[in-house]
Image (cartoon, rainbow, N blue to C red; front, side, top):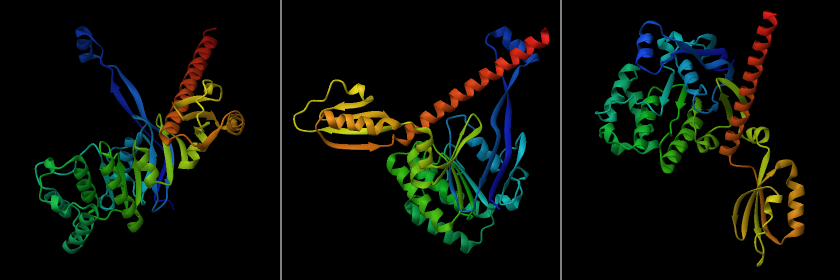
Length: 349
């Protein structure tokens, strides 16, 4: 039985449409106009025990809303979900003690107190036995290398140091499920790498189930074998990272190093899109179905010392996929509007 099971889960909000101008504001006091915004549109998803799953999507796609639903912060408009057999929005204490939620843009630690004081509070909230608390705290502090910072007020810590403390607070009660919403947002490369190393080690050692949202593809590539992509509140892809490239990228990147004293050809554009031109090297973007033909033509016409063929960067593939999804949804919207208009015309006759 899956650890997390979601069926037709949906969440919509009514958003007040404020009009410009004084008169419109006065009218709004007595007659307000709202529009319905569907943050999540009937998604289905299962996650097995000990999986580390990346949950990707553009801003406003519904990622954070889904994590809030699974953690019981908000209730759905429709649909069902269970985590470890619990319905999250019932907010049972037995469930709260078995999961944790970390949001990169929100703090759970007391700002003006040292982190160790917040940890003590968490010990009381989760009723952690003193020996278990001390053992777990020592392990986490050692893994993250923050022992010298425990007595320092949280407001004096750097962003990366605060995130390490947030992770410690979330893991003190040894949850079986961890929801991570943008845990490396705003961090420098070194801090991101350290958080990645910790999460990978901890997940492998404890076999906990982690659902991660992130806009940093390096987080995803370093940590997750499975990727779920959501756009416009709907799941568009569920599979491996390699599968994303195969399914959504129609191009390859060819890097060339011209040999000898040969200058870069002026007509490189006839082979494909020129991404970089810096003698003696050039980089081309080629339709993946034309790679063999293009390479044969280049090698027959020029002296090449080195050549490589690679998939485009994952960020580019994801951006291309989002663009395809937006185009498809816009087209579906136009088709629906056309059908409604046609039906209206038919009824009026």
